[in-house]
Length: 162
Ligand code: THU
Image 1 (cartoon, helix red, strand yellow):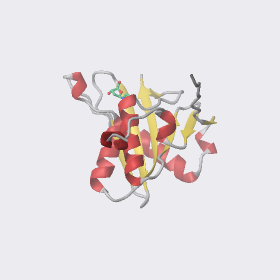
Image 2 (cartoon, rainbow, N blue to C red; image 1 turned 45 degrees about the horizontal axis):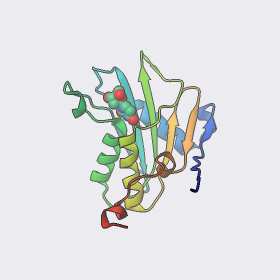
Image 3 (cartoon, protein in one colour; image 1 turned 90 degrees about the vertical axis):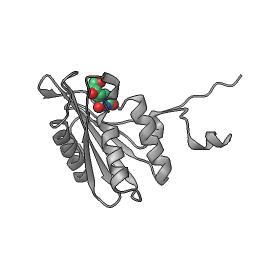
Image 4 (cartoon, rainbow, N blue to C red; image 1 turned 180 degrees about the horizontal axis):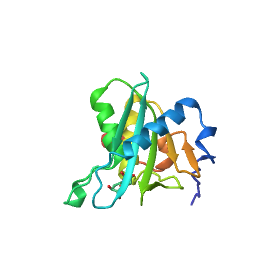
């Protein structure tokens, strides 16, 4: 038996002012996107902003449905839209914010498992890490690659029996 450990590195900040100008701008775009979320069932508004290699920024927010599972998270709305509009442009970063009861959450909300898997596919597709900027009002967490958030992930090579 061999025991191994998987370590995730998280950079924590107490204020957006500590982020670079480009990161701050991405957070602003994610917050803006959250305000347009369609979430009448959970009343939990999530906003995402994706920064592409060509400096385009694509916003997305969660879209809910009365048949609950038919809705989609903000991260996937943003990343799928980015990939559909710019299929040849790598994704550099994604900022994520959440708002409920009238205010943005103090703590950063990480993407759900399905969103992590989708972000990971995009990392593999462009062979480039996507920086995650998880933004709360009192804490910001930055993770340099989605792979760090989804250890033991399923990847395309496995389909070929590798
Ligand atoms: N949600 C997201 O948009 N992103 C996540 O990573 C987690 C959850 C949305 C889905 C649903 O509309 C609401 O938040 C409550 O789960």
